[in-house]
Image: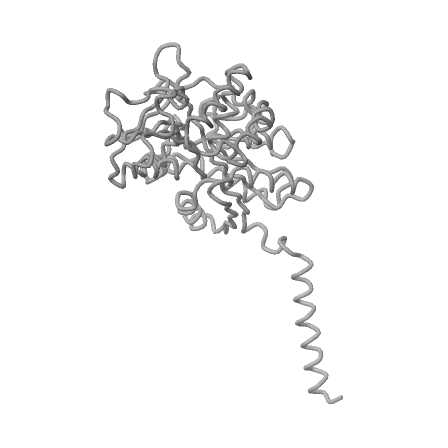
Length: 346
């Protein structure tokens, strides 16, 4: 073998060694400059904040999104399956109960951000394992061409009133905020009352895959009113659809309107803990909630230092349902065991 051939062979061996080292080190290579985030909030609303974070910190965000209909439950299932070898650093959930399920399973790490005290106690973990911010309200969206103002529904109980049979809609209560709302109702009502409500709901209303589809059905006149979230309801308002938002159960003695926060949590044993803490610090800053409130999702600020736009109702301007989210999370399995056979095949 000539000297030139020996040099070429040596170079090839060196190149393959470099590749092998990269494969062996895997995600640890450059790990301080990356954060893996599982995201249940719609991509169009969350992604701009990742871009801002990357620009400010130099840390790259690797997001994992899931489908519209089952994203919260799907991402939670993935995190539970990865318990022994976590791949995710931060879970940005668009609700709270599945975050609490992860906490109960011991998957969340404790961290106290510098501004933790800016958030109400009822919307954050006392142990520092999760933080709620940028909430949404569970509302009734009404088509004003089909329903006169004096006839507007005012309570979630109107969803099971026979006079609205076939004219109201709801999202499948096995995923997302509708599943969260169901578990909350199982925690504030007796089981018999909650079961009766959802049995009647199935008979009385029309089921849609998700809250967005409910809102669109109201806006297009397919149904007279629907049970949905404020972000999807506001979307129909912006589109010019003939709709109005009703914050339900505001009368004395009624439940009040349920406000559901987004939540942030760091996974225990995550691959990039330093980057995860930086991201949580960034997303809990006032400017993020301000932007989410002013943007198309119209998220409701929870940070005491953020003023909501005049067009956004908050737990201070509407009667809010008083919820023990931990108690509701404890009812998740009970609610799911009743609702799954009831709604899975519809």
